[in-house]
Length: 139
Image 1 (cartoon, one colour):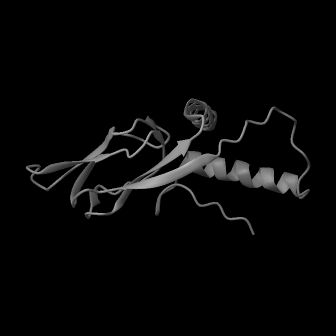
Image 2 (image 1 turned 90 degrees about the vertical axis):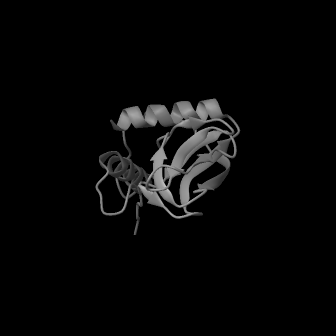
């Protein structure tokens, strides 16, 4: 059995579905379950050197500043988290340069909730370009 987990709970994410379908069909071709696809140049795999979750500095309403696949710099503000009245605001910042590979879509967070997943790459520019091309290809 092959299982693709992507997107967000209780929602259909068309590009995540297309990516999962493409990946599953590729695995089935490699295993000989389907005929080989037309040959094309395969992209170079990008392997993350590590990753770290950025957690909400306080409980409140999360206003994200970045999206999935965005390249971020060390110390960049990823989101502002405010109390319901907006009088007390804290910032969630990137602990290191990398790419956003995960993001909570919930508009409210408790202190310590995981809100962004930032991956580091040896060749960050190449990884960012690869993600952009992949997103464009899936539409």
